[in-house]
Amino acid sequence: MAVETLGSRSRAKVSPWNDPVIRGWVFQIVVVGLVAALAWFLVSNTVENLQRQKIASGFHYLEREAGFEIGDTMISYSPASTYARAIFVGLLNTLKVAVLGIILSTILGTLIGVGRLSPNWLLSKVCEGYVEMFRNVPLLLWLFLIYKLISEAFPGPRQAINVLSSFFLSNRGLYFPVPLADPIHQWMGIALLVGIVAAFVTKRWAKKRQDATGQPFPVLSAGAGLVLGLPLLVWLLGGAPHHMSWPELKGFNFEGGTVIQPEFTALLVGLVLYTSAFVAEIVRSGILALNKGQSEAAMAIGLSRTQVMRLVLLPQALRIIVPPMTSQYLNITKNSSLAIAIGYPDLVASVNVTINQTGQAIENILIIMAAYLSVSLSISAFMNWYNKRIALRER
Image (cartoon, rainbow, N blue to C red; front, top):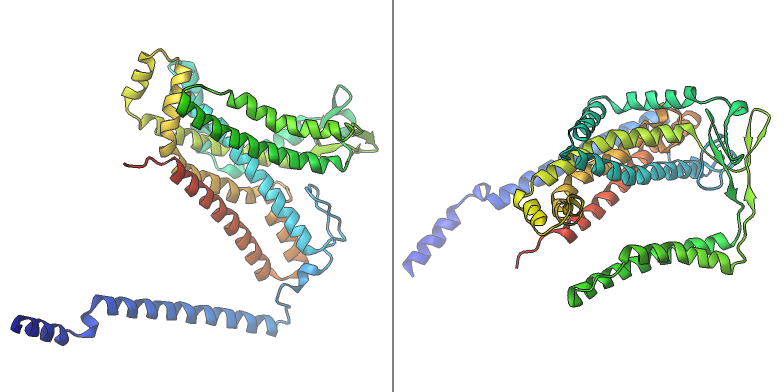
């Protein structure tokens, strides 16, 4: 009882400042207060300066008429549209480049990374040279070079390369026919989404079936049938509309059909070639991190080199590859902002024109930051979810 009394007296004599919990809370409160004071000073000073210079603030300008053209749009847009729609069009263009770039750079980078491990000396050295060449030259220089090659290597619209009188390749881009808008196309899009979901469900069912019975199921052909067959079935049930819009040379350019612009091609090709060099090294290091006994055991049971890579090594290396791949996916999204250097109307380009016309730089820069932050956090969240899903779980 005396010991307890002595201990309680000792604890009572301890100074609150020597308590690590109290001291930690005090430091955090002080830091938060300083940050809040700095933020208040910057905001109030900015607002005061804007008022002194009679510069408007706020986001009311987003509802005003934009008054400028955008060359590549995924949704309907005209100069009479609002600034908000113009910025949204730029965001969609950024997402289009980012999604296509992630898919293509993953495929190309994986092939190059596997090629570097090939026993074929020539193939291995070609892949190594590719990695060293693209990884050690700034991306902006590659974009300039690819854009110049595209714009100067091909003829003008009047001398465009004609393929089957349907495809026309010139320095203005690749023109090709597209179906005319029809209400059935919306239902085909819904059928495509249903097919993708059905293919995913079929894959999970086939895996459980194989684990239970040992019998394989043709998942690839079944999934392709669902993804492609359902939209085709909807198209046939809708009367199979086949009216097309064909590109025709009128004056100094083509009208009708649709076009893949050289700016978009240069940006996408540059991003894919540059990023795939880093992806290749990630894939190669992930495979080399595995125990050599894995490939030897797979070869011993009669698997070919392709089967060993596809069925044994890559699935195991995936757990090592996924975390650093997240950074490369984020880099593709952020590096797409270099599109402004070659004239592609992405988010940064649309906002830059908006700044020049409205003078409200702070609000527009905040919009860019919020957009890239949202997209990057979404990519990170998805990759973290996928990384946890494929992680090994200890029993």
